[in-house]
Every structure is written in C-alpha cells, then in structure tokens.
Length: 441
Ligand SMILES: Cc1cc2nc3c(=O)[nH]c(=O)nc-3n(C[C@H](O)[C@H](O)[C@H](O)COP(=O)(O)OP(=O)(O)OC[C@H]3O[C@@H](n4cnc5c(N)ncnc54)[C@H](O)[C@@H]3O)c2cc1C
Image 1 (tube, helix red, strand yellow):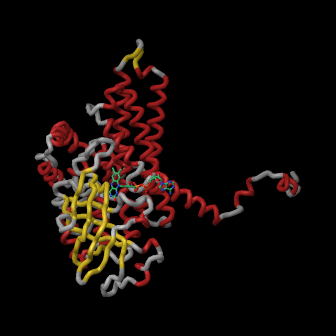
Image 2 (cartoon, rainbow, N blue to C red):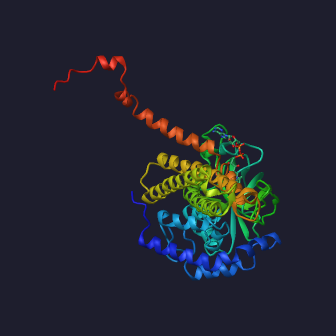
Image 3 (cartoon, helix red, strand yellow):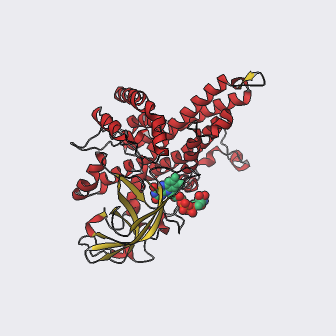
C-alpha cells in the first residue's frame, strides 16, 4: 500500500489550494453575510463556479466519467486530499460541483439511470445547472433500518403513485433543487414489461427487495416541502427538509434501475460518498487543530501560555494522532475502492468503519479546540461551533454509528466462523501442555 499522492494528484492539489486561496477565502465573510441576509446561493456563486469550471476544477470526484462528460476522472485516492482541502471551507465543495448530496446522486445516476434519464437529470447536474436531494428517512419509522421505510409506490395505469413523508432531506431547500431521488416501498405488481414484480412485492418476502427508487421532479403536484429543520439550532441554507408526498403521480419511466433494487442501489451510492464526507471531516479537524495550536501559543493564563499547560499539550498531541490514524484508514478505503477487488462484505465493513471513526474524530478534535478557545469557540466568530454541529450530525447521517459498528462486528464474526478453532494454537491450557511432544535439542 502506498498512499503518497501521485505526481498528478499533487498538481491537482496545488491548483485547488491556489484557487481556494485566491478566490474563495476572500469571499468567506461575504458568503456568511449573504446567507444571513437570506440570499442563497450568494450572488457571486455562479461566477466562482464558472471560474472553477474554466480552470478544470470541476466534478473532481467521479472516476468513471465517460468521454464528453465534464470533469477530471481522478481516482478515489487522488481525489481524497482534494476533498480534505475543500472541507476546510464548508461551502467550497459546491463551487467545484463536488458537494453532497449531489455528488452521491450523480454517482447513482451515472451507474443506474438509463440514457433518457441521464440526459434529463445527470447532464444538468454534471454542468452544475441544477441541484438534487436523496429522500430515504421518514419521521414515522426508525430509518436506521431501511426495511422499515413506508412511503408507498404503486402502479396506476401508465403512472406511479407515491404517498408518504420524508424528513432531514439535505439539499431540498436549495433554490436550484429540481430532483428528488425517493426510496419507496413497492405496493402491488409493476405492470412493466421485463420488470414484473415477481414475488418480491408480496408482503413477507425478502425485505431487501421490497423497495425501489424513483426520480421525482420537485415541482410535481403533491410534493410539498413543509419545513427546513434546524440541526442543533443551525439552519442550513440548502436545507434538511421535511417533505410530504401526497398522491404524487409520475410516469412509469421515472423508475431508477430495476423494481425492487432500491437497497442495492442505496448501498452502491453510499460507498464513495462516505469517503468524501470523511475526507472533508479530516480537513475540518486539521483546521481545528491548526487553530487550537496557534491560539495556545498566543493566549496566556496565570502567567503561562496555554501551550505550556500539559493538559493542552496532551489535547494537541491526541488530536494529531487521531487525525493521522483516521486519514490513513480513509485513504486505505479509497485505495480499496479504486482496486475494486475486495469482497463486498469486506468493503462494506471498511466503509462503515471510516464513517464511525470520522464522526468520533470530528466531535473530539473540535471539542478540544473549542475548549482551548474558551467562550469564543462556541460563538459564530470561528468555524468551530459549526464544525462541532456537523460532527454531531455525522453520528447519525447515512445511518447511526451503532448500525455501522454492527456491520463491522458481523464481518469480524463471519471471519471467525470461517476459521473457527484456529486461535487455540496460541493457548497454553493444561491439556495443551500435556500434549506437548518431546523436543530434543
Ligand atoms: C444533518 C442530517 C442530514 C441528513 N440527511 C439526510 C438525507 O439527505 N436523506 C435522508 O434520507 N436522510 C438524511 N438524514 C437522516 C439520517 O440518515 C437518519 O437520521 C439516520 O439514518 C437514523 O435514522 P433515525 O433518525 O430514524 O433514527 P432511528 O432509526 O430511530 O434510530 C435511533 C437510535 O437507535 C439506535 N440504533 C439504531 N440501530 C441500532 C442497532 N442496530 N444497534 C444499536 N442501536 C441502534 C441508534 O443509537 C440510533 O441513533 C440526515 C440526518 C441528519 C442529522
């Protein structure tokens, strides 16, 4: 394993860093002021995006780009340090068309949408002309377990009809959001040639084949964005929204992929997306540590700089160790995704692992930095309070930590079952001592 950046990745990184220093950081305060004034996206966003596109810093996350599609085609491993750098400024990813949830949705459409669907939705997303959202979670059921999801999808003549309620749907309040990718529970037969429901739609059948995904234009009658839910009192301008779907009627060709394949597609969507999230987290933690160390060097208490207090030194050192460990784990995951030869169960466990590690990292490292900053660390004057809020949300987003730990544990138990008994060779029980053969010198 060699995780040192390739010469090409180094170049991309230098270009991205230079672009951020030159064009984005000078606009940071203006971005926040604009959002505060209710202007979102800020008036300069379009110009910055055009500039990024001109410089080729566009769709950096999508390795499988086809000829003619705009973007760089970088590998996951080469993209990772770029995501880390973008993470330092939470609104930066959108400038480069690399922001969640659009990046995950583009990946999904890239893999599973047919030509007509790609022309209608993927092409404008790749050009950054529209935004999208991914609607899975529901208020009325424990959405950690997606087999619970209840929003129904039923065939009615040439159409599908949807009914249900979704919430915490990121991106749905963005004024450019035009598309909802909705996970629904199949109800009744499809009436589609070649995609007959078979037994999967019948209640009691395999719980992992009872859901499908559909492409729902946001302006379809019956789709109602009810509210943008604040997260720990932080109101994201792009939104984490509650959405009502009441008798929503869409044509049959809006089914994404095959009937009953919703679960498999959701799994495929989350792999690379989690690497991106984790690398952006690591960028934020790195910035928090930089801020804490600088603050510790300049702030004095009881006649000593904070940097001379041993507990502060411990916090800084622990943060450095944790960030570096997490980065190596995430880079290993990116490398595994690029190689593409890991067994699916191993890859799933790996991706679950980085999700937990990154969420824990963010709340711990940022919490320490907030403590070093004193009251200022809790104010909106530094990015720390937002970083902490985001870290807290990460313990739930894309599934809570406990579900990911369960995936990891199940994989370990599976491996143990395969090799059962092998570790007893390391025991030194009395029975084994008695069975020791005579060893002559
Ligand atoms: C900021 C933010 C953005 C989000 N964006 C989106 C989005 O864009 N689209 C979308 O569809 N959803 C989104 N979500 C929702 C998120 O995916 C869900 O909150 C998450 O999957 C958990 O579901 P739940 O809230 O229903 O918790 P529940 O399923 O009710 O779980 C409650 C708690 O039960 C515990 N638990 C669950 N399973 C286990 C287990 N196996 N073992 C032990 N304990 C367990 C966990 O502690 C968990 O926190 C977002 C959430 C947040 C906070």
